[in-house]
Length: 184
Length: 187
Image (cartoon, rainbow over all chains, first blue to last red; front, side, top):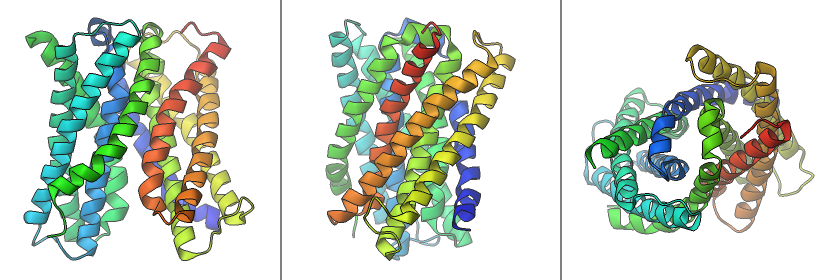
């Protein structure tokens, strides 16, 4: 019975998240020309996806704890606690994006691939910050709906953010790579 | 006020920077194989999928172990029966999920008019073998992280997810490339 309940509750969600990852992967699959044109682009992809996943799930779980502590709820959502969390998450996205850009550039040189540092760091920064803003807004909307319905945010935000996060992040990397390739 | 953005940044930076170092390493592995991946987009599409499934299963397993340890129905022992059950079910769920998603990926590549270059049976075998190895490693890492962090008085809920997703991202790429080379597909 123990096994049956575990499979019943988590397998559908894991398969659903996998389908989300296929959408993210397909975005990568149509980016083959960009990957050839921008050396080093492929290096930053796992890092930005991981950054996004870590920052937004931490943001979601902090909001979950804040809810359980009684600091925020549906009627009192837009307060100073939430603002501090938003600023914190966006500052982290900004700082760590710069670290990703520099590390990707330096490590590529060690591998004897020579990316354009301005292009590479711009792509990471634009993709990191825009996906950060979109996912922050998405998290707040999800949290608001969850509060309204009286669900426990801890059960919902993690998987929801993991699924949408990968797709949104890949689309943002794709978009910023096209933007940088055209305008820089 | 319980949150301040400076604290969030200060607490977040060390673990994130460590994660990023390892993920950049994963990215360099992709760079080495970039020509092959561009030639076989089916494997490029598979990479986020392999990583997502292992990360999710590892995190679910970790969260379940954490609850069991907190409540007390799982004990820190390599012989714990509940832990064995959780481990085996996780691995089985992983295999089922990889089999289903392999077929979906293959269909998308065929109907999306991308270059296929590999048979369905061969692709499923490659994805399942790499996925099976990865799920075993990630599940064991999840058990180890949950047990070790609980033993040291840290909350496994905070530790397991970042550790298993990072290990899964690197090892997923390593296993995929190794299995591909065993099968002699030209990546």
